[in-house]
Image (cartoon, rainbow, N blue to C red):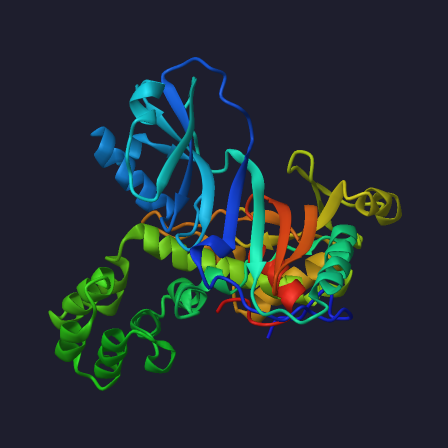
Length: 400
């Protein structure tokens, strides 16, 4: 169970995401298009579509390759989202007349380069909480005030660990070359699966009936089906697992990195705004990190939210902290029976690693009642998750 930075403040209760319109997200661009060039920066508002859905629809409507389209960030389907994509060699009037269900073209401005992942400053959120407690607004205001002062825990949280909540365990098994365990986790525990067909397939697999598992897997479980078909044909567990899409395998490994980072968040939860000797501190203005040698002097900058302590997303290039912070990071590796070199994998699966701030600033906070509901608004930097803020505010499981 997640601990809360704002545990001393009561939550609002309630539920979110009952409807697509309950969750509004708008990208904050890193830069504006210049008005000339071979690419077109197209800002859209979409409902009920993922970013990948949007790219697929655009590529079909414009008769172009999906890989030629650019985007800055990935957005959920269960939301109304405003985001920008780049399209090569198209005129604004050609794109403006597109008619794609669930998509409204808001603007189309030329620019010189393709939009790349990460080319955004952050995201603005407006989220509706249904059925909160009667005094929810002052509760939310107090929580948002504390988060504004101390920062938001920069957790990845449950959404990082897949629909079964076990992506990180698959990544851990991959690093340990425990392929039987990886397969068991990929097919899933029947007790955690809600899709009936998938649940029956997992039960068949655990009973040793691979043929039955293949027959019962739902159509969308294509990688899992191919894995089981290879296993049925006599291929080794190692070959079966490593034959899965590399993008998916890297997602599992990334989830494991994220889980280790979240564990360090929990260890330092009561001091996320404190600079320790030996910390590698993060400069919020440019993302650079530096070794702290004078924590008292640097604490002044931390109090002004210029810098924050970091923890590693472990990888073979990860630089570990020194002092007490470094001891915590090394002890976690020892507990997992790992070294950073373990992340140097073959087949395009190596994970370089990086440092990530333990806290992030929250800005533009507001909350107001709308009938019996509560609407909360705030902005976060890129790479951070609104669910962390909502968990702090609600103190309940945030999804309906």
